[in-house]
Image 1 (cartoon, rainbow, N blue to C red):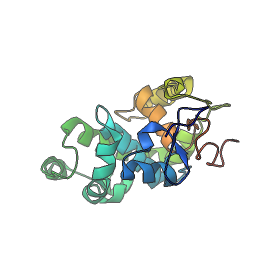
Image 2 (image 1 turned 30 degrees about the horizontal axis):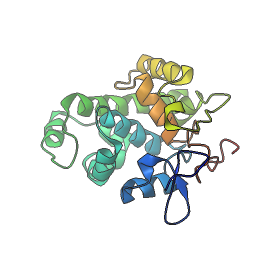
Image 3 (image 1 turned 30 degrees about the vertical axis):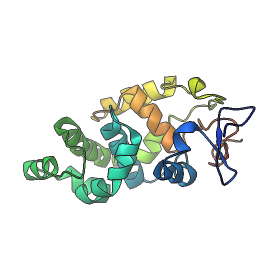
Amino acid sequence: MMTTDSPVVLGEDGLARPPWAAADPLLRDYYDTEWGLPIRDERGLFERLSLEAFQSGLSWATILRKRPAFRAAFDNFDPDVVAAYGESDVQRLMGDAGIVRNLAKIRATITNAAATVRLREQGGLAEFIWSFQPDRTPEPRTPDEIPTTSPESLALAKALRREGFAFVGPTTMFALMEAVGIVDTHLVGSHRRGTSGVWAS
């Protein structure tokens, strides 16, 4: 049911969630336990960066269902291992029905792994991405009030491209920033609003 003061959905467990996380058990669990919680390690951020790129044009539910297969196919998103992939690995990945078989995105993931390794000379991927945290976070009361880009996501996208990353547009980077806690776009009224420890409720 919808609550009276906010377009969140009240679940049978009494917890308020946005509509996208209210029905599918997989998305509900992801919302409750992962989405928006801070990720500050290199491997974790490289995985999220990669999966957000694969999600472009698809639903997140599709990527989430395939995440175990993605992790197996890409050696648990170890940047050093993925950066060393060659053409035989590209062909192996293109033949893997468990993942999204998009040649450009597969090549971009390998490219981004190499760029991630290079970034260690500048403090690493985590420090780089988190340096674009804004001074304030959105406070959306309805899904329509949730932005899809921000000045910071635009700046992050440009900065990553300068470092040799691919498939890092401002919309994809804003989705990444939401997913890893850099911004809090949980709807006001959701049980997850303000729970990341990054932003006050």
